[in-house]
Image 1 (tube, rainbow, N blue to C red):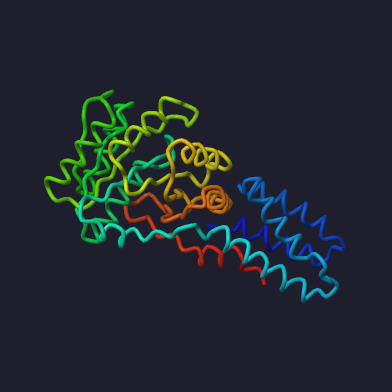
Image 2 (tube, one colour; image 1 turned 90 degrees about the vertical axis):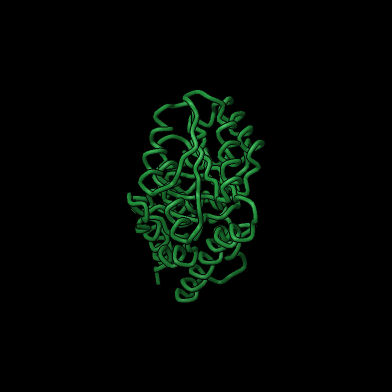
Length: 296
């Protein structure tokens, strides 16, 4: 799954051990990181940290160099993947007496709607009651798609007519949850391009009306630097509390997780690893780090 990024770091360690100049190896590492979906700011951070760690160090002993590189890479990646605040979704839901409200952000094609169904399935198995709001009213197909997936996992969908006010759909879903004693409200949102100002205004209104406990950005791990741009724009205009990366089972290079974490400083709470409704796993940063640093 993370073979490509793992090979980048492995190649770097081996290359450095045989190069006289660390600077040449660092330049090569930066190119490799960029080609493996690590955003330029994140790549710069990794490379600068490595350079700083070697300042004043004698690097003639190969074994010492290898150990220092490994420890430096682990420290850097751990820091990048450590958010400002961890989120335990189950604990957060249990703490709240009124419905726990989650708004989902993401552009079309990222797997946002399927991910909502996966979250609903996950929470349902944990014993929570759920209702979904079809607040992407911009596309009739979006309402149908959400209804299809939620029907498959046994979750009711609150929906209005095509092109109705998205915020009113969210409001009605929350009122329904309060009246029925439902634990969680999952709110879909439109997935047009993030450069669409009307989209951002629309989502801002949804959040203003619904007052969500959690705003989740759903990003495609195969989208390269596009996913970083999407996260940046949503975070700037709406605000992101957590991230979910989809399609990590496919040919993902691993860089998206590092870049999203570095850019948003918010946790990746789940990753999608398949097409089934149970193909959603909690993101474990220690496992992720181990998978890409099996180089010694």
